[in-house]
Length: 519
Ligand code: ADP
Ligand code: ZN
View 1 (cartoon, rainbow, N blue to C red):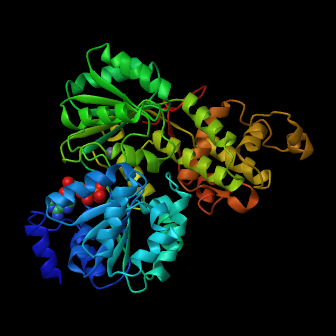
View 2 (view 1 turned 180 degrees about the vertical axis):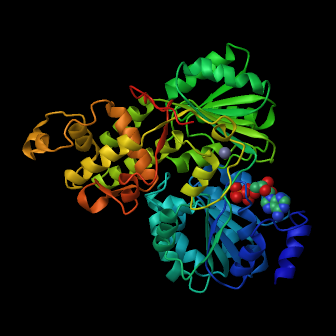
C-alpha cells in the first residue's frame, strides 16, 4: 500500500519524496492503527492524513476547528482532482444539502468538518452508514485545557472510537509538551496510538528578546532591517493594533490592522493583501495567523508578551516557512506581566486552571530572562534536549551581562525551608524582605532567622529569582498544597554552594544594589 501512497505523493500532489516522518506516519495509518502526530507548523501534517485517506477505501473525515479555512483547503484539493467537500456553519442549507447527498452517494474522498457539526446526531447517523477510510483530528491540542486554544466541542470527539470501530484515527498538532500529549491521547480516547514527534527546531528563525523601553521606537529600529519585507506585529489589544498600524502606515510602511473587531470583509481584504502583495506588515491580535500559509514572512514581532511559550512558539512559527533566515523579535516588560496576571486573576476559571496559567507565564518570563541559548531553552521546554548552543539567537550572539545570584538564591531556599515549604511566592518574599504582614504575624515568621535577610533586593527581583529556580528545577510548585513552593532534591547542591546561579543584569527591574559581575 505504501507504493500506492508514493504514487499519489508524486502524481497527485507532485512532490518528489516524503518529508521527515511522513512515510512512517502514513504506513501506521494505512495499517489501521491510531496515531498521534506532533509536528511543527509547516512541517507537512496534511499529507499524513490526505494520502492514507485516498489509499484506504471509503471517505476520509477531517475534523478541524478552522472553519474559515475549510473552503481554501477544499478548493486546493479539488484542483488536484480530489473529490473534497466541507460541512460547517458557513454553508447555506442548500449547499449543505448537496454535500450530504454526495456523502450519501459515496462520491467524496475527503470531508472537512467542524467538530460541533460532526457530533450532531443527524450527521453521525449518516456517516456511520458509509465506508470511512480514516478520521483525522487536526489541531488536536484544542482538546487540552493545558493548551492555549481549548475548544469544548473537542471533548465530545471521544465518541468516535466506538461510533467508527476499526477506523484509524490520527490526531495532529503543533503543540508538543508532554502534558498536552497525554491529554490528547486520553481525551480523544486514542487506542494504543503510535506517537510521532518531529523536531520543533526552526533553525532559520533567529530569536531576539529585549526589555521593553519605548516600544514604538524599538520597533522602528528593528524594522530598519526589513524594508519592504512581509512580517507580522502582534499586539495584545485591538486598540493597540489600530494605533500601531496607523502609526507605521504614517511612517511609510504598508501596515494593515487585523483583529476580531473589524468586519469580516475588512479582515478578509487585509488577509488577502498580506498573502498576495509584497512587503505587507500585518499588525494583529492573536486572532490572526492560525492556518495562514505564507512562506516568506521574514519577521514576527511581539510588542506585548504572549500568554505562554506554546503560544509564542506557534506565533513565531509563522516566520520563515520557506526556510530562509527570519527573525522572531519581542520586547517585554513588567506591565505585560501585571496585565496577564490580572487577566488570569479576573477570569472565571477555577483555581487549578489559574495556577496552570500562572505557571505558564512564569516559564515564559524565565525564558525571556534566559542567560543561556534561547533555542536550547525553547526546545527543552518542548521536551527536546540538544547539547550545543545555536549561535543564532541574541544570547548566543551577544551574551548578556550576568550577576552571581547564588547567595540570594541560598537565602531564598533557606527561607522556604524555614517557613515549612507551605507557602506561595508572595509570602515567602514578604518574610525575606522583612514585611510584618498579618500572615507573617499569624505564623510567627517575624521571629525566624531568615526574616528580613533579603531587604537588599526588591519584590520583582525575588520573583525573578524564584522563576529561574523553578525553571532550572531547584524549586517546584506543589499543586496539591495550593501552589506552595518547595525545595527539590537538586536544591541541596545550591544550598551547599556546589553550584552557582547567574541571572541577567538587564532582566526586568533586576538591578541588585551591588552587582557582582561574573561574565
Ligand atoms: P502543517 O499542516 O504541518 O502546518 P502543511 O501540511 O500545510 O503543514 O504543509 C506545509 C507545506 O509543506 C505545504 O505547502 C505543503 O504542500 C508542503 N509539503 C508537505 N509535505 C511535502 C513533501 N513531502 N514535499 C514537498 N512539500 C511538502
Ligand atoms: Zn542560541
